[in-house]
Amino acid sequence: MLQARWLVLAAQFESFVDPLVIMLSVPLSMIGALLALKWSDGSLNVYSQIGLITLVGLITTHGILIVEFTNQLRGQGMAMIDALVKASSQRLRPIVMTTGAMVLGALPLALTSGAEAESRTQIGWVIVGGMSLVTLLTVFVVPTMCALLTRAAVPGANMAVAKEQPEFAAK
Image (tube, rainbow, N blue to C red):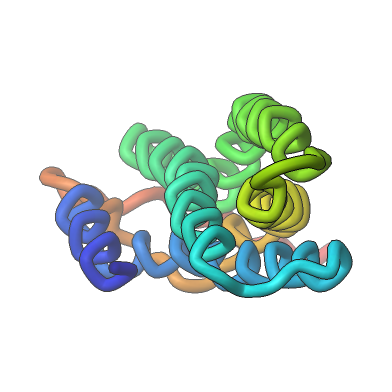
């Protein structure tokens, strides 16, 4: 499933590196989800796996927001680091709002009790734990990996070379 998603993203971004940067947040979300399951005495079953699949779709959105806006800014001629800083700061609010909505929406599932609560709590804890941890990490990991792995040419049809960072003059 992840390979197919990566290939679709590679076709969309016209790059093999950008989907790799975006998909780096997926293992981080799995760590958060499995830690939440462990702390809530949950198990890895069909219901928690459904939550993990949901989590993969939600988490890649965070990386897409940052990488896509960075590529747009680089296409306008902005330097890589400047584009990353601007994209990360301007996309922080939508990322936090998405995370808040999903965590608050899944919290009743995680805290429910009664008949059939076992299935609902597994999905809830996976989403709450995965979204909470990976949002904190994605804001730092995606821009860092984007700065380390992307090339000087801006992905897309025009393949323009973005301005490089000016060299610091010795004082």
